[in-house]
Length: 203
Image (cartoon, rainbow, N blue to C red; front, side):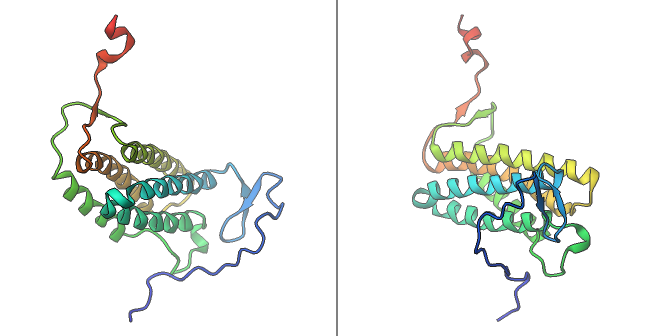
């Protein structure tokens, strides 16, 4: 059996509250104390938020789209790996610490290309809707874009692995394709943007 690429987690969560964050600070993986609204915290906190929504979409997909559910479960593990590296200052990163690599980015690209090939070309922008899973995937997309923006902001101030930003960029694209693909497989029409459906267009 081959050796694992990353180290297994080493932690014991015996106490959930410690009161050490009551003053508005928290600690990074290397032990540094930082403000809870620091860019690095905002960045991996948004990745954590995204992970929660991916879990929601994965549950919705289990029965109707098991292939997508399996992909989303993998993405959850990848997002936790991403959070691990974002929660660590570059000087404290261990060689076998969990992180995002080109392998994760390339896998997303293969899945995007394969599923997008089954979709009809877009003639209009689409709105979230048609199925619950579609809307959950669109929520994932928008949170992913916010995480990407946070990573870009952080990269202006501190060192951030290039793969982290690339992964979030590609994952945002993937959520868009998966949302369309889900409606197609579920045989649900897409909700197309029609500007004149606004109140002013009907007056």
